[in-house]
Image (cartoon, rainbow over all chains, first blue to last red; front, side):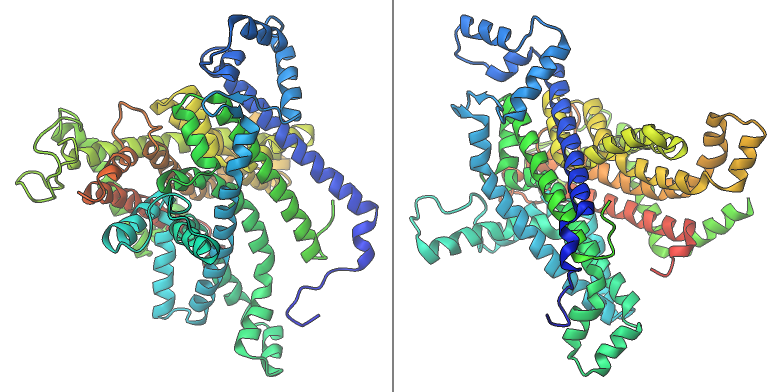
Length: 339
Length: 280
């Protein structure tokens, strides 16, 4: 392993009792979160006009007998607690119901939309970490000078600008005025691109959504990188690295900035949750066929079932990501107590 | 009292904090005087649609696609933004402080239960949750405020809990317990005042976030349909982006400048109230 890479603690560390307890504990926490999301969904169904079967069937073309049997199946003649348990049992089996708008199960609709959102979120996380870190390093290296002030001003602006405003300003500049980039959709309909041309086409459609979505977190990573750099640049191990004759780039990215790795991993975990929320706005502005856009459409077609399905799957995605982040964290830092 | 004066001096030493205050005072003044300058409300048609700013005398910011005065919309919109921002922050602070205080003071099973709930709410994508709540319950000013509060209180709860865990073992708290002071009184009159500076700094973040979320919701058409807000102005202007970009950009600029001013105030407050962190 090179000096710049992360050392992973002793091999047996990940296969002993402490690890199993850690995994079990985190899984239990994840389960609690999902149970609470399900409870919240149930409460929202109760708050919505009509009963649960109205919600599940929408304004549907089912016969009266079918609806009556469904009411019995859901136990609407029984106490709330029984309905609650039945609803849980269905969700636990990923039975999210049926959408009449799309003539498909809610699960299928969402799974079809999930890749677009994941693509958007993944690119945004990566881009914001890269740009934010580079900005932070540049600011720290010129601390107190013009470049630092300019980057600080930019960071303040990024902090204060909601993603949908960034999106609209970008559309105005790059589509309306300059005519460089397409404003909506994931690819050019009817262009029939294949191979490399298709990838280029999708990339052109995704540039603005990804950039708009990542500005806020670019600001956060920039502050993080700047603070870490200012703290570590004077320390002995950085001086040693310099004295060894390492290039400036190796000194910064291989040594000084290493301390920022853990906060960045933590932040990336939080970011995913926030970006899935932001995706509702971005996908709506850019007309991308993702999960957020589906939630938006579901509200205006009064498809509560689909809406709550999106909530359920999105929460599940975030829970899985935060589990991965926790394990990654323990893997990256041998000092982290597995408790 | 002297401490407060010193802190005020520290705050005023930061020009960015003073700038933030100045902007926020201006926006508040706009919100308060909206009814005086535009007694007929923001949606009345006053002239030809799509008049550019300055194109017709008396219409400083021009008209939107319905022929309403954009300045009137901006002033009434300031009302909606500040009302939602402050109310949602207030509710979040009350709920978050209550949860955090009970968690940190009593610890034990109450702490476990409350913190699991806090974890769960923090994990859920907050903007999506706000969209879902408003979407199911129906859009009104109240539902927007409640939905934002529901997703924002955990931050305060964690902060207050950490402060209570730190402060509960201090000698002055033990002393209060020995003289027989009730738990409620210790929490409210002894420990809580010591957390206030942290809560004040965090509340600036809450207000800024609430304003952003409100703008996002009303941009999507999920705001109160009877209230003109900056978000809804941006949303309706978007359809005529080519013909009149100013309709979108003017309210957008007000959102950014207002949020920026609150962030500047927050940074200055942080420097003034938590001097330990000042080097950052």
